[in-house]
Image (cartoon, rainbow, N blue to C red; front, top):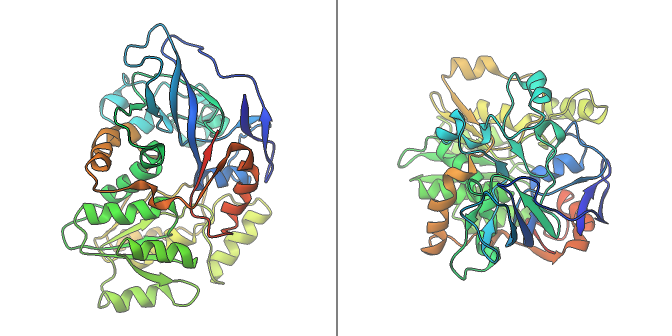
Length: 389
């Protein structure tokens, strides 16, 4: 089968690889009909995620048609349509029973490796590093899906792939980010970044009762898409974010702040962003943490900072004193995708949201290597790439 394969920093190729196949009785195999490139994939592409190996198959936003079913599977039959969450969860451990699916205790076969770095291991993830399981990803013609009775959601309606594909990650991730922000009716919510997750966080903030949403970025087409989602915008290349947010909130600051950027934040020459970039360039640090610092600085006292943006390792100069003295709540984590699949599918089916609004590029799988670079470099108006194997 064809798949997008990681061969090192900045080196993704469309290779022929062994076909996906049933390995355990709880598996299914999908023929992928749509898959996407995520901002998190760029952290792998840019070499910031340790424990990647030459030959790893990328991708964690897939959906498709069931072509093979393990003997222990009860939910699926050949021909069913399925969207696959990027989190692999067993459904039986303490964390899964409490719907903390991204913290599943059993699905990371390399848990010992993760424990050395994190203290405990999170769940295994499709298409990420070996520290997070080393599972083959979904930017491919076929995908093996473990724990199939727990993970994927069945699409019974005739909704096109493009409307339901993002249940795999970015719609639930944006929604959980808004939920973690603890939005109260009428709150002012500031969202850093206007990439795909941020776009869903903006729309989810409205769903949860925000009175005002302010989006921060520097890319014109992303800012324009945020404005289509009824957000006010700040271009951080043209305005000082702190000063502008204080002006917009009468000096109090936003009630809720969402860092939808993560470890590859850009700055505009501030001392911390320059230092972050220099350290990352020589691999003295993995994370450029300008946005989380700025969100803490801007958030009102007793406010909440929500972090859906992915961080990899240690960050320098974390303003813990400011967070403590302002009484901030900080909530974060990989998305418990399975928790949100059915309620968010119902919102799509009811016409409350059409997630396909974020798609700018729809191409064959073979164009994937070129589109990784296009997406990373924010060229050609690229906001979200969908690949059709």
